[in-house]
Image (cartoon, rainbow, N blue to C red; front, side):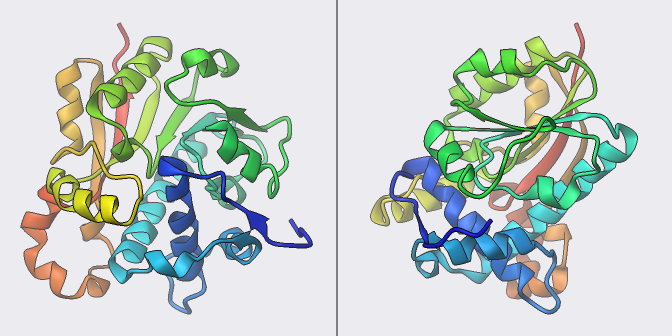
Length: 268
């Protein structure tokens, strides 16, 4: 991964553009001596992308991204320990680098995102027999036909579903449930009050607003297709770094901050 000049990302708009601050915060955290994660690929990426990352800089967002990345990494690592030859389908993959951190030499891994995002990804990462890119929208369900495996599959949705409206979130999750019974989904949601407070800021800065959030991942069980196996709040991790926010933990957990859930699809 060594292009001669910086890569333009002008084609990334709306939801697609949100991948850029995410990779920046992972890289910034990785460069800290006592950082929560180490992501050398993210560090390389931000050096080679032509974008003003600093305009999105904020310590709370950086810490939130780092904590959720750690939670997702640990959950995927646990899945691969149980299913070394399993399959991971990364929905709304952006420039996620998890494959480079967790590849065990046997997993099959799909990165699904819009064509313009996959075009950028191809400038930095190469596909292989086990590592494949799908340039499609998550609501273009023809992507399902490209997943040949039917067992031991983990679907991952990090930093993605909160940008969709409830109708599309439900449509995507139920479509996965109908086609992959018994499999698991690892997903993220945000507190509903964050959506309310984020909207004006998003409009003012011309960035994609949050649209979907629930106080707890257990809300998905109302759709009768899912069982929540485990749920985490980012506020339960690295409490020493949350500063004054720790004083309002009970309020922030349900109504503002990120929750991650491991969900099992209930077979018919």
